[in-house]
Length: 312
Image (cartoon, rainbow, N blue to C red; front, top):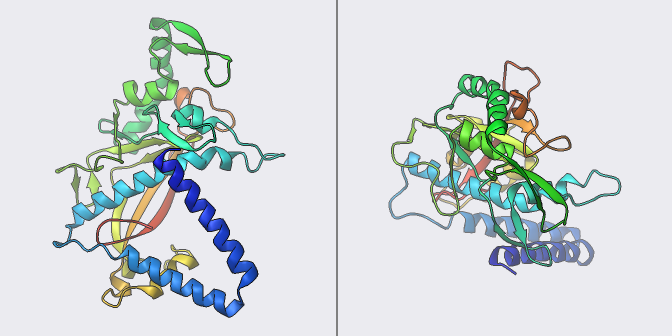
């Protein structure tokens, strides 16, 4: 079992046993007391890292975003199970595993990611809604030109034993779009910061980001992500009750109004479950998946940020 696989396995096992113990062997008052103590300890550990020299706003944002992308990559390992939960009967799909090149051991525990497909990709040339939409309109024509130049071949899939057709350049349709048509540059958050010196100014990057989440494709604009204080979002009902509750257990030297949050805004621009092929559906037709074809549909998330850039 890999280090990542072992960590995920033991964390899940510990969570299950803790839940069983608290539910059947503790009084309500003791459960409340233990929950408060758990929140106090988790918050103390979260804020324990204090750099000798406080990070600049740009440095803190870069580290927070690096941890955000690490979190998104770790989520890939559980997405297939989540996709099949609503099926009758529930099934575990292989949409994400196959698209992203996830490699597991015999027990199904994570080993490695064999392809760059589902890593975030920096898009510099087409880094606005207008530029991206205009370029995507050209995708059908550019794909047709590719099919004329590149030969088709069939290979036997090692995991299923079935014959799988693919063009000889080895790229799926999504990979070809993000690499060759959009001229994307892959980013590996496990070993590099998402923003290099000079790439971030006033909470705006010099690039957008495209991310394939297995069954969905997300787009993050240049101004997708910024740091805000609790005072700026107080009363806007953007935090869950659990997230609000955690703020009551802050270390004594941190004022609640000064707590920093990472605000992330992104849009789902394509979906490949159930009707996707080669990693895309709408994009291959030159379209963006949106309720209104003239506007992107955005989702906004908030994460508490520690002085070292950790998020929760």
